[in-house]
Length: 180
Image (tube, rainbow, N blue to C red; front, side, top):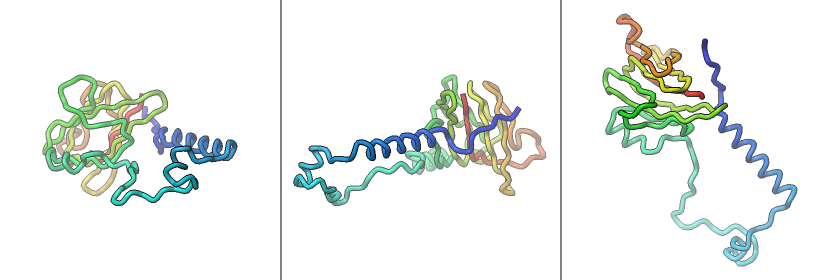
């Protein structure tokens, strides 16, 4: 039985609803600058000029520290929604990935009802994946660029790619999804 994961993580919907609620409250209640903002702009309520060299923090979905992890471990962590993260192996309750070239890589998934955890990666030569207590789906790319989807058995090793047959060429793990 294949699990139907939503095309978009549920978190995006929650953010959109929160943004609409905030916009509605501004329209209904009216916007006034805070006393702090008024004081910092000379009481005019205008936006202050940005600090020199200051950059705003914008969430772009990129995996934090990805370049260092790629250099040290040989795996590429591209993006995700923060609900699946790279973890140190050796503790129970992790999704475990075995690669012929990289070795054992572990991930921690955090989900709740209706949430889908997602991480986009590039891990070459993956041949087996062990699930945790979640419904886990792995997507692997073939040498021809085709995407294969595997349902990972809970708390057991599931052969993928060349692990399914000696005649299957190596495949690259490109995405993990987990649901409660």
